[in-house]
Image 1: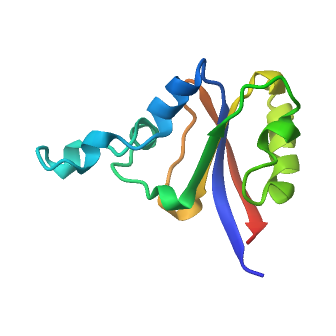
Image 2 (image 1 turned 180 degrees about the vertical axis):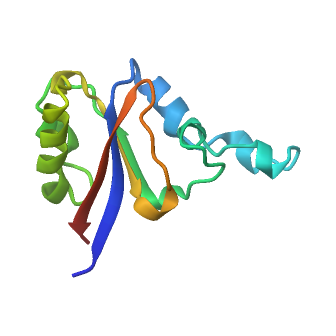
Length: 130
Protein backbone atom coordinates (compact mmCIF):
# COMPACT_ATOMS: atom_id res chain seq x y z
CA UNK A 1 0.00 0.00 0.00
CA UNK A 2 0.94 3.59 -0.59
CA UNK A 3 1.43 5.98 2.33
CA UNK A 4 0.36 9.57 2.74
CA UNK A 5 1.56 12.15 5.25
CA UNK A 6 -0.70 15.02 6.21
CA UNK A 7 -0.52 18.04 8.47
CA UNK A 8 -3.25 18.07 11.16
CA UNK A 9 -5.00 20.88 13.04
CA UNK A 10 -7.74 20.62 15.66
CA UNK A 11 -9.67 23.40 17.28
CA UNK A 12 -12.89 25.16 18.01
CA UNK A 13 -15.15 27.55 16.15
CA UNK A 14 -18.16 29.14 17.86
CA UNK A 15 -20.47 28.38 14.93
CA UNK A 16 -20.51 26.30 11.79
CA UNK A 17 -20.81 29.52 9.79
CA UNK A 18 -17.54 30.82 11.27
CA UNK A 19 -15.90 27.51 10.43
CA UNK A 20 -17.09 27.67 6.79
CA UNK A 21 -16.05 31.33 6.50
CA UNK A 22 -12.55 30.31 7.58
CA UNK A 23 -11.90 27.11 5.60
CA UNK A 24 -14.22 27.57 2.63
CA UNK A 25 -13.02 28.83 -0.72
CA UNK A 26 -13.55 32.55 -1.27
CA UNK A 27 -16.03 33.30 -4.04
CA UNK A 28 -13.87 36.29 -5.01
CA UNK A 29 -10.75 34.20 -5.54
CA UNK A 30 -11.62 33.29 -9.12
CA UNK A 31 -12.67 36.80 -10.16
CA UNK A 32 -10.15 38.46 -12.43
CA UNK A 33 -10.36 41.98 -11.03
CA UNK A 34 -7.44 41.65 -8.59
CA UNK A 35 -3.83 40.65 -8.89
CA UNK A 36 -3.34 36.92 -8.21
CA UNK A 37 -0.56 37.60 -5.72
CA UNK A 38 -2.93 39.65 -3.54
CA UNK A 39 -5.73 37.07 -3.19
CA UNK A 40 -6.06 34.06 -0.92
CA UNK A 41 -8.32 31.13 -1.70
CA UNK A 42 -9.44 30.94 1.94
CA UNK A 43 -8.73 32.41 5.34
CA UNK A 44 -7.15 29.09 6.28
CA UNK A 45 -4.76 29.44 3.32
CA UNK A 46 -3.95 33.01 4.41
CA UNK A 47 -3.20 31.77 7.94
CA UNK A 48 -0.63 29.38 6.50
CA UNK A 49 0.91 31.97 4.16
CA UNK A 50 -0.40 30.30 1.00
CA UNK A 51 -2.36 32.12 -1.69
CA UNK A 52 -3.69 28.87 -3.13
CA UNK A 53 -4.33 25.46 -1.57
CA UNK A 54 -5.82 22.67 -3.63
CA UNK A 55 -8.87 21.69 -1.60
CA UNK A 56 -8.85 18.30 -3.35
CA UNK A 57 -5.93 17.41 -1.04
CA UNK A 58 -7.52 18.83 2.10
CA UNK A 59 -10.24 17.50 4.34
CA UNK A 60 -11.93 19.34 7.17
CA UNK A 61 -15.08 19.36 9.17
CA UNK A 62 -17.09 20.82 12.01
CA UNK A 63 -18.87 18.60 14.56
CA UNK A 64 -20.41 20.37 17.53
CA UNK A 65 -22.32 17.46 19.07
CA UNK A 66 -21.65 16.43 22.66
CA UNK A 67 -20.06 13.12 21.67
CA UNK A 68 -16.60 11.61 22.12
CA UNK A 69 -13.57 12.77 20.16
CA UNK A 70 -13.54 9.47 18.27
CA UNK A 71 -17.23 9.75 17.37
CA UNK A 72 -16.79 13.31 16.07
CA UNK A 73 -13.97 12.47 13.72
CA UNK A 74 -14.42 8.82 12.73
CA UNK A 75 -16.20 9.80 9.50
CA UNK A 76 -13.06 11.32 7.96
CA UNK A 77 -10.78 9.56 5.51
CA UNK A 78 -8.38 7.03 7.02
CA UNK A 79 -9.43 8.03 10.56
CA UNK A 80 -8.85 4.53 12.01
CA UNK A 81 -5.16 5.10 11.26
CA UNK A 82 -4.72 8.63 12.60
CA UNK A 83 -7.40 9.27 15.22
CA UNK A 84 -5.59 7.56 18.12
CA UNK A 85 -2.33 9.37 17.33
CA UNK A 86 -4.12 12.71 17.10
CA UNK A 87 -5.94 12.16 20.40
CA UNK A 88 -2.70 11.21 22.18
CA UNK A 89 -0.93 14.33 20.89
CA UNK A 90 -3.79 16.56 22.02
CA UNK A 91 -3.87 14.91 25.45
CA UNK A 92 -0.08 15.33 25.75
CA UNK A 93 -0.65 19.06 25.16
CA UNK A 94 -3.40 19.11 27.85
CA UNK A 95 -5.94 20.20 25.25
CA UNK A 96 -9.56 19.83 26.41
CA UNK A 97 -10.91 17.27 23.93
CA UNK A 98 -14.51 18.16 24.77
CA UNK A 99 -13.94 21.66 23.34
CA UNK A 100 -12.73 20.43 19.95
CA UNK A 101 -15.25 20.67 17.13
CA UNK A 102 -13.03 21.11 14.09
CA UNK A 103 -10.43 19.10 12.20
CA UNK A 104 -8.34 20.17 9.20
CA UNK A 105 -5.81 17.97 7.47
CA UNK A 106 -3.95 18.47 4.24
CA UNK A 107 -1.28 16.69 2.25
CA UNK A 108 2.14 17.53 3.68
CA UNK A 109 3.63 18.83 0.42
CA UNK A 110 1.13 21.67 0.13
CA UNK A 111 2.29 23.59 3.22
CA UNK A 112 5.99 23.90 3.99
CA UNK A 113 5.76 25.64 7.38
CA UNK A 114 2.41 24.93 9.05
CA UNK A 115 1.47 26.98 12.11
CA UNK A 116 -1.15 27.06 14.83
CA UNK A 117 -3.56 29.97 14.81
CA UNK A 118 -6.08 31.37 17.29
CA UNK A 119 -8.67 28.63 17.07
CA UNK A 120 -6.72 25.82 15.36
CA UNK A 121 -3.85 23.99 17.02
CA UNK A 122 -1.31 22.40 14.69
CA UNK A 123 -0.40 18.95 16.09
CA UNK A 124 2.10 17.90 13.43
CA UNK A 125 2.31 15.34 10.67
CA UNK A 126 0.69 11.92 10.71
CA UNK A 127 1.44 9.19 8.19
CA UNK A 128 -1.20 6.66 7.14
CA UNK A 129 -1.81 4.12 4.38
CA UNK A 130 -4.11 5.03 1.52
